[in-house]
Image 1: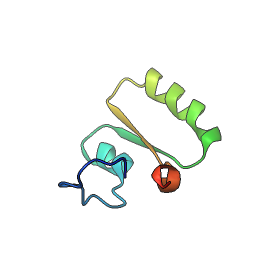
Image 2: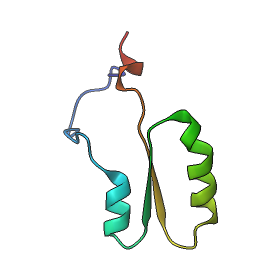
Image 3: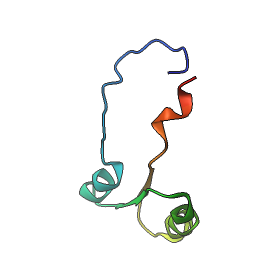
Image 4: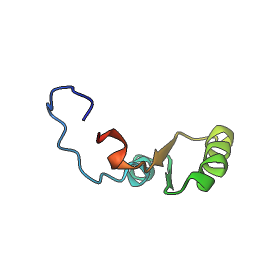
Length: 63
């Protein structure tokens, strides 16, 4: 999308938050901008590894 060659990027709709939980840590899914501050605050205070999975607009790279 950013003029880089498409190589080994067939990762579609992967749930990184669920992956964090399955690995023994925690995962937070952020779907809206107003959810981000709370998610980041929780992640920074966590005593275990945590993944913050931020859903972004895939159209942002389309010109």
